[in-house]
Amino acid sequence: MEPDIPGSCDVLVIGSGAGGGTIALRLAQGGAKVLLVDSGGQLASTPPGPGEPIGTYIRQAYPKRGSAVSQVGGQTKFYGGALYRLRERDFGELAFANGVSPGWPITYRTLEPYYAAAERLYGVHGDGASDPTEPRRSGAYPYPPVPYPPEIDDVRRRLSATGVPVTPIPRGLDVREGRGACRVCSTCDGHHCRLDAKLDAEIAAVRPALATGNATLLAGTSCTRILLDRSGKRAGGAILQRGAVEYSVGAETVVLACGVPRTAQLLQRSRARESDPGLGNAGGALGRYLGGHSAGVLFPLIGRQSLGSLHTKSFALNHLYFGDDDWPYPLGVIQTAGQMPFWSELPPGTRTAARFVAGRALTCFHMSEALPGRNSGLFFDGDRISHRIEPEMNHSAFNQLRRRAVRVFSAAGYLTIAPPRRPALWHQTGTARMGEDAAMSVVSPDLEVHGVKNLFVADASVLPSAGAVNTSLTIMALALRCGDHILGQRTCGGAIGKARAASSPARRCSSYTAG
Ligand SMILES: Cc1cc2nc3c(=O)[nH]c(=O)nc-3n(C[C@H](O)[C@H](O)[C@H](O)COP(=O)(O)OP(=O)(O)OC[C@H]3O[C@@H](n4cnc5c(N)ncnc54)[C@H](O)[C@@H]3O)c2cc1C
Image (tube, rainbow, N blue to C red; front, side, top):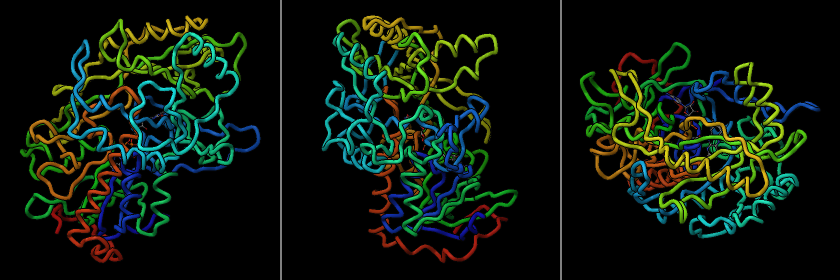
């Protein structure tokens, strides 16, 4: 049974994914009374029976591709646990053949201690030594890299022999040199781990937050609106909906972490009057600057026979990240993916052939940066998203990287199938981006919504750009930094621990004004 909805809290965190789960833990550890709300429920971690797969494929929970992933832990319940730091140069402006990736209002150096803390929290296994693009680190990875299975080590050896640096993907798994719960199985990336051995936001952050005794989780509860105080310039709480009933909850501070696009939608929906711009939208930046990764797939054939079940999300080729002598612009990364039964989603006529290829190939991604611009993103008609415009998909980098990837595997002796597909937008960022200038951004460099005190955003929406590596660790690091900022502010104001009668129940709503 879900707990009663309390009438107030110190900090209301909405969304429990990479950003929300992580900031909830930081705040609860810092002594704040946190109410963590997620519209989704909790996935049951029923240990698999003998011979059953350990992981449950994402399409069993979300059959429709593109449907919003919603459960405690957010998308990280299904992620591959590839936990990368952006590269130092990703924080500055970067020129591409198709446009420009914008600079950030903070530097890599500012975020480095939080990257290190996020790596410890999410138990990252890695080794930067073999990666020519690894940014400067204040310390080693918390754990050594996950060992390659022999079949994958053979591929690594052949690629290395051609002079290409092969680097282990930094992973948030509970391996710990064989002492952890992880079985390094084939049902990891794209799956929910029923052994709780993948360090997702629920396992690494939400559960420890609850264990502090300072956090309460309300699953299956949606936030429908942010409440402001009478001045209209300070957050005062939110309207929460469980079933058909709405409740008004007071909070000293509100953190939005609903992900892209739901955070931006909530900021739009929470404006006081129809004619007002959304919260943080005085400069018209809300919903804009959608970015992410311009992603494609390729299949180097590494076996004549079916490979069987194998942990294949193992290594990456990052040497083309910033281009090379033949290409003066950044290109991106080539990364092995997990074994996912993607053929089950293809039209019946192509399923058998796709399954045959996938059984003998490494499924690999190639990812370049998709370039955010003022005109990419969500466009609103009242509370509704009327349409969206994709970012500049950076076709020249995307196509060039695909060609290079085929060449790299061919040089190592692998025939590679690279279906000529249009790039897909993965790891979406932006729509409430951070910046100094309210005309060009929605939140400050401390992630506070412009013009609204004590309302923060801590999720993928604030990233000004996505670089070309997976973005979750950056979301987590930013969430930890924002958590420290809130704790610092509240300690100065003496507010921590003074939640207004948290034991009193929430008011069923009739009015939309807090305070
Ligand atoms: C199959 C798959 C594999 C991936 N692999 C990787 C990887 O290996 N590495 C990596 O870095 N990234 C990976 N990603 C992407 C990564 O998981 C996301 O970028 C990241 O989780 C985004 O974090 P977030 O905090 O912005 O949002 P989310 O994690 O999406 O969390 C948002 C949460 O907010 C909740 N919510 C939304 N609206 C409301 C509301 N109104 N009220 C209450 N709750 C609400 C949602 O239910 C959700 O739980 C993968 C994603 C998928 C789907």
